[in-house]
Image (cartoon, rainbow, N blue to C red; front, side, top):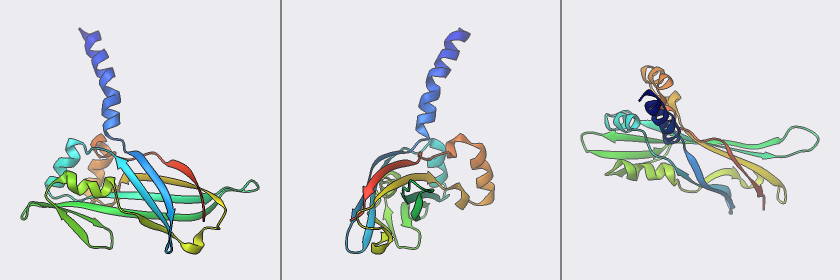
Length: 181
């Protein structure tokens, strides 16, 4: 009996670990007149603890980090671009609506949490580098990750988040190459 319970618990551990991961489903850099824009798609689900937190009025901050490096054979890679963007998801119990806002911009209102999270899962194209920041014809390595930013929570919640696996939601750095135009 104990062996059966141990095997069951061991088989469920990968599922629990997978529930707290963010997968980068798609990422690409597009050049236009303004500069270089990042287009991404993430796949993740919130844990029950995170859903409860946001529906009880605690805003969640999702930060996407981008690093663009130019490889050099004679020295360390040159860092051409480091950029971050944070999307805040919150709930207003008076209006019973969810809000999603990119830091420093106006936000949108949604009726469901899943709709609000779609702005995190499929954010709009984002200008990560001005036109002159990358050298045309050079190949760059673009690294992207997305994470739940617990540093933006109030201190009591930060302590709780550090001690709870429900609050560890992040992706690994995913890299791809890009040739600047």
